[in-house]
Length: 321
Image 1 (tube, rainbow, N blue to C red):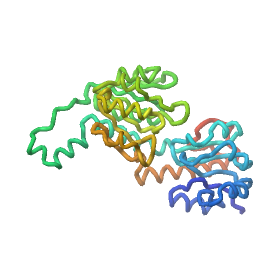
Image 2: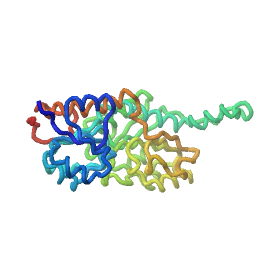
Image 3: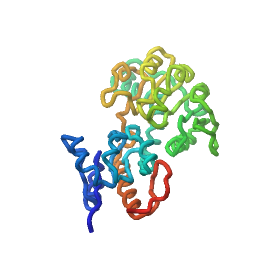
Image 4: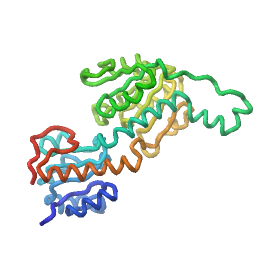
């Protein structure tokens, strides 16, 4: 049987690539030196694309990919993929949000607790000998009885909220519309920040959310508030965040993502009231393998005419090829 042609714009995990190589003819755009020439030559024969959210896929690129009917993304985010252009052309887009949900939710909780209980500073206090020479570390504030706002209440946002519930906090959230959920709804992120003690950003990246978390949000969250970002660096007005943390307008932050990665602004990373993580919320072997496996599973389902496992939007049911 002739193998179907698949364009690889960003490689998956090794075990996944082995499965893909066995099932399809892979065209390694990711390894091509002259990418426009490669796309012009091999693009017209490809029926599917393997990629992730860090590889750009534009409307212009699609002009060279007339047979493509599905794009399988091995990450949750896909802001560099022109999803509107795909949908207009009847091309499916899948991602891996379900696979990484638990590890990202765990990381959000970890960063919130570490920031509010000053884990890094307290660790240094013990290691340096200051505990012995200066005495007990200053008293902090309990999580119990506080308010946690989740900005973005999709699959991951709901998992984050449920991890906070055992801490006996109140939970609020923002979304485009109120959901049938047991938590308090806020229509605007600034109102949520004004209500909350800890604000967790888990909104998607892209133009619609660029700099959503700005000076007004940080002022509303306040001098004892904590901002946690497990979304994208682009959703934050980073100079405003630096100013708020430096001036004491905002109490602390726990950040997994940054505007400039992997070289975030030292004006941010050198602040004593920031807990840092290197965009690694999904960074476990188990989760990265599961994220990659969604690519294999979605491709197999599509070509078999079966429902996709993790579509980003709805189209008429795939009929196979």
